[in-house]
Structure formats: C-alpha cells, structure tokens
Image (cartoon, rainbow, N blue to C red; front, side, top):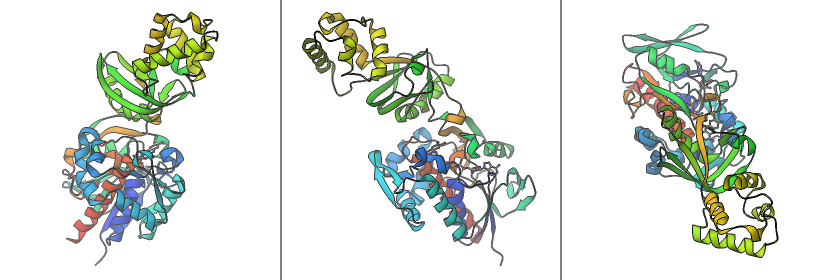
Length: 417
Ligand SMILES: Cc1cc2nc3c(=O)[nH]c(=O)nc-3n(C[C@H](O)[C@H](O)[C@H](O)COP(=O)(O)OP(=O)(O)OC[C@H]3O[C@@H](n4cnc5c(N)ncnc54)[C@H](O)[C@@H]3O)c2cc1C
C-alpha cells in the first residue's frame, strides 16, 4: 500500500515539527517553503540566541497567552517543554535554563538550532522543497485535495498549513495563510502587531536614544485606569520605547490604541526598591552631604546621565542649583518624578518590527485535540497563523512546536485509521 501523502506549507518551527512527526509515523511528507532557506525566522529568534521554551508549568504557560490560551491546553498536554528539550537533545542541541525560566540552547546559537531542526526533519524522511510558494489550497466537497504552487499542483491526502503570521515579513511570514484560510471559509480575527516597540509623544524617545533602564517598574494608565504593570528592563531605541517590559505591555496597548482609548500613559518608577519615605530620606541625605555640589553631579548618583537634563526640565529645578539651594518643594517634585516619570503613548510600530502577530485563524474553527479544521476535512492549521499570541519568554516558540507536532501527529494517524 502506498504511503499516505501529506504536504506541509511553510518550513518554520511549527511546519518542521509537524512534518518530522508525520513522517516518523509513516506518512510520505513534503514541505513546501517559499524562501530559499527553511526556518529563517527561527534563525533570528531571541536576539540570535533562540529562547526555545520556558520551564513554566502548563497552567502558568497558558496564562501567558491571555484569553485564547485555553485553546492550547490539549496541544501542551500532548507535547510540551520537556518533550521539546528531549527532542532537541536527540538533535544534538543541549539546553540551559535562565532567569524567568527561559530555556536557551547551550551554544546560544539560533542558526545552529534551525540547522539541527532542518537536519532532523530531513532525517525523518521529509522532503523540503525551498523556493516553492503555495498560491492556493485545492478543495473538493469540503475536503482538502492538494495545493497549487506558482509552478504546479500537488495532490495530497492531508495538508498542514503553517505559514506563520505577518510579522517580520522579510523572513517569509507575509500573512499568506490568512488569505488561504479566508478563501476556504475560515474566519480570521483581525491581525495586528504584538510584542512591538511603542511610539511616545514629543522628542523624549529621540533624546534618550540608546538609554537602557534596568530594574524599573512600569505601569500603564489608559483613560485614568491602570491597565498594566511590569518590572524589568526597558530601552529607548530609534525614537521608540522597546525592551522586554515594553514588548509585553504592548500586547494590550496596541488594542487600546486601535479602540481609540484616549490618554494612554506609561509611568516609570525609577526607584522601585525605595518607598516614598526612604527615597525622601535618601534625597535629604544627598543634598545635606553634598550641599556645595552642583545638582547635576548629585543626580549622577541617582540617575543615568542621559536622564538628568530631562529630569531637571520636568521638575523645573534650575540646572545651576547646588545641594543647599534645593527647597523642600523641589525635593518633593524630584521624588515624585523619580517614582512617576511619565510618557504619553501615541502609537506602535508596524508588523515589520513586531515579534509576533495578534489575531489570526479563529481557534473556534479548529479542533484543539488534533488541530484539524472544523470547516475543511483533512486540513490542519498550526503555529502563529492561529489566533494565539503569547508573551516573551519562549512561550511563542513552544506554542508553534506543540501545535505543529500535534497537527503532524494527528494528520498522520488519521490516514492510518
Ligand atoms: C525577531 C524575532 C525574535 C523572536 N524570538 C523569539 C524567541 O526567542 N522565543 C519565542 O518563543 N518566540 C520568538 N519569536 C516568535 C517566533 O519566532 C514565532 O512565533 C515562530 O517562528 C512562529 O513559527 P511558525 O512556524 O508558526 O511560523 P514562521 O516561523 O513564521 O514560519 C512560517 C514559514 O512559512 C513560510 N511561508 C509563508 N507563506 C508561504 C507560502 N505561501 N508558501 C510556502 N511557504 C510559505 C515562510 O517563509 C516561513 O518559513 C521571535 C520572532 C521574531 C520576529
């Protein structure tokens, strides 16, 4: 009996896990990838280090995906972070765990991880055809029968669609899958950039370009209500706010901006370890012991250099003041500013700068136990193309691995039933 034919569209992490698993189970698997090289996005993940997954247990993992996280429960129970670690070990990639439970390869080398995954996929018997762009899904009587590429038609018993989202389109993820899904009757929840740098009012981000703030606490207020809070690192880069806490907070902020919520402010506590009383005592001490010293020099002990000018401007303290001249009112303004440095958020950067895509194929139309479409029989959809989006910390790659693996597993098993 000939082997059942499965075509996987897209050789990203979800596509390669799907293809490798389906082939391992005995299917004849071909992956069609439009770029000349498989896994291009994977090669730039984690700033080139590849944050593969996270050691958080399943309930906490699911929380990191917001309201759609529960869709992933079965995929995670089928194939989770220990399975990913074991499989990468089999591929020759050992892992290490860092702060926040983030898991990285020992070599900190994302391209090497991608190469190991490509080699493993091929070792399972998968044929990867690069420079091959799928243009249409072929359907007959609500059942998938194949795909059309720019060059020719491919017939198959099952198709696994893993074309990724719309972020960083240079890597090949240009959002083709959304159009394929819509064309065959799926609904696609409006896509928007997520884990994306933010724009702020005025010239402040430009003036603070390249400043890196660590151990700060940032809160978001939208129309006067607190809507988010994160502790960690933030940086100013090319007129924008970026860094881990900004990327995480951006998931809600993008939606608030799109919903036309007014007055979205980010307020930074630059001294989260000191409460108001302790901070005031510290300021009193600094001004007393340095009573003849210029305020600029005193502030160097409290702030990064780049922030001093902005601090003095915003607190209306004279640049030429010395310690003994600082009034109680000025000290209060300074303390309040250090605990509440505000910036108004005015926008977010486009898809080409977003780590992931929010929105996507409606998960209500996908069977969470198999990743099969509830609309088209024999079609499986996995990875970032689905309406799932997680926080930074290895959550998104794990979701791609888990849903991809489950799609490949179920698609192959369904052929042998
Ligand atoms: C800069 C950056 C850093 C990141 N770092 C991390 C990290 O450290 N940890 C983490 O968990 N997540 C990270 N992510 C997110 C993670 O990379 C994605 O969530 C993940 O790659 C999604 O996998 P996927 O297989 O669904 O899609 P993709 O990786 O986007 O793969 C989709 C593939 O489909 C191909 N394709 C598209 N259309 C077609 C078509 N018509 N025909 C044929 N092929 C097609 C594309 O060329 C691509 O190769 C990062 C993302 C970016 C942009």
